Amino acid sequence: MSMRSVFLLLALGFAAPAAFAAETSGQERVLQRIILIRHGIRSPTKAPEDLARYAADAWPAWPVAPGQLTPHGIDTLHSLGKRMDADLAQAGLPRDACKGEVRVIADSTPRNRASAVALLEGLSPGCAPAYLAFPAGQDDPLFRGTGGGDDDDKGGIDAAAMDGTTRERLAQLQQVLLGCHDDACMAKARNGGKQVLLGGDLAKALKTAGSLAENIMLAYAQGMPASQYGWGRLNADGVASIIQLHNASFRLAHATPEASRGRGGNMLAHITATLLAAAGKPGTTSPLAPAGTRVLVLIGHDTDLAAQAGLLGLDWHDVTKGDDFPPGGALLYDLVPTRQGTAVRLSVAMPTLPALRSGDMAPTGAIVRKTLVQPACGGQRACPIEQFAASSSQAAGSAVVDTLEVEPSAQ
View 1: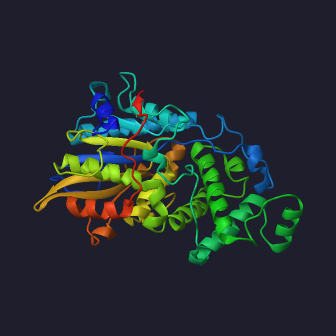
View 2: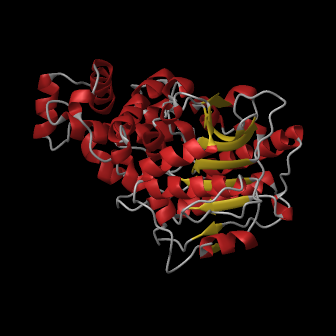
View 3: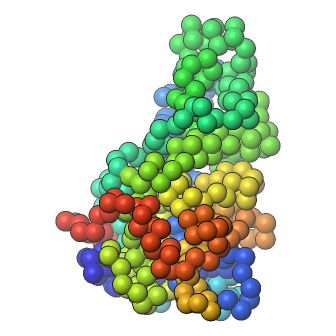
């Protein structure tokens, strides 16, 4: 057992919320659930003056420094935590973090640490939140992987794989950014020192467009008026349309296990080891929690979600009908009993863009949930644990860090 697991023995526990439940029958019992969830609503990672070269008008100001969790993001996570509490009570599952019924590991970035606090405050407001994390600024290989790059790194994109709709959305975003997108407009913008999306390297353009579209989406989710999140040239439906550029960028960058291995292989290996331990089966990698842990929450990034999707061949695009990797969005790994033994079922729980904007996760439709087909398991929805472990091991390859000189500590 690694030192990370030892720390987990001393940390908190987490029970699975029905709001993050897959589409199951009322008779099914979940033996263990691991939730990989993205941090809450943040400001863009670049300051408005750094983004100025992409747009004709000034980017909106934010109430926090670049890349930080916003006050609205905190309130939204409080609401998500309350939703978890209510759904856990309805499902008869333990949910009191004050009694050690919640286990949380967060990435070391300030927004992830702040997200852990906010989520736990919403779930169990009667005590000080506690979670595991490295010191701020120190990379955690569980979330950062072995391939380098930060959470905005989207890897290589094959421009030839871009479909016509994605190219049309590039033009749509260009229209939003500059107020025009014809050839004369592009030439004038370039002469004025602007960086444009059209007429150059499509792969590079899509990477840039994905980030810019996400910045606009975050402003929408933050609750800014249309005059700020789209300079008056975009409505809510338009936000849902251009965020598809962010989805496409991630989907193409993580199209194969090889493309996702550096970022997500280590995480997948440790998640699989944790599921194996809960099933009473041996593994080759140390689990993230003791075998008796019912639910573990990992607070990561959109890139972590995308990497797991790439490694496991998952596609939930039709489910979200908006951002495939929204703030507070989660991928769930459930260990469930079957007639043949134990199996792993995967599902998603994604807040809608309107719910993020309102900050209210209580309504039934605020979170979109769906059980996923697992291509690596013959298209099954519940993959036998041994088969899941074998395919996960192949996908993760050698991108595994099992011994750390410094371990995350309780916060």
